[in-house]
Length: 335
Image (tube, rainbow, N blue to C red; front, side, top):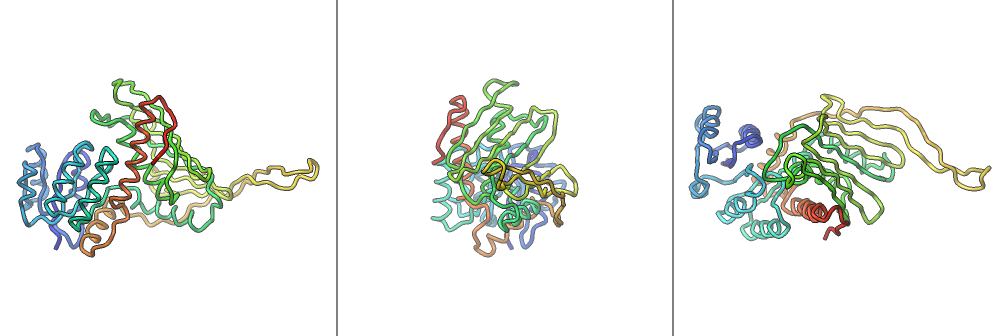
């Protein structure tokens, strides 16, 4: 049996605790948090687990096989590094780290110690996103022209990271997953209205070498709560709306295509209007599936879908995007 400890039991950490408490064949063995009140609440909800206020003491517990890190992003690197060096398997919430060099170091460390390193790119485990991936790969949409995402809300307002680092990792990971490739250039603009040094709203434009485009809009200063993605293909178009309780995916049998225009002695464009249909998607909580995947990978020695390399690819885009953001939207190559 896998004994797992969760580090960080705050807003999102308590959801991680709940999800791992229901995974098999693992046991939620311990939780660690510097806030004793939060830790006591967890102990009340999950009697029998070990509670630590010291991370160093937790790592010395030889019964712990794996660590799940759900702390603020700037702490991810050091906590994950210590856990891997202590021989623990590591699940770390997105983003993996705050720099490319830190992510690369964790990947090397995990390989050296022969330990699993997995990143919590939650949306990759969403049944509707996986269904959308199957639809795209089948060729049903035709050639993919462009993708755009909207992740908006009023709150939660962060103090230690901007909307780009807090919200965009979800959308970046989805775009990489659906496209199967990495964009080559990025331009990002944003503004901090509540605090000048922390951008509350961010717009990002990503370009691929083959001409495809993607746009990301993230904000915690917006009247709408939106979790939406649109994929436009040459044959059909798809909208994923995570705020819809049941109809998460809608496929639009619409498009524009060139036909031979005899009157103009050349090509003419015609717009094709078709039906809208909703594919059947069997829903299951993405977080539960993600945590179960981590346990499965550790128990069987399998490579996670969102492994360290996947986390590094996302951080490369985040870092290049931050460089563009700091340079008033200058186009930056993604290396």
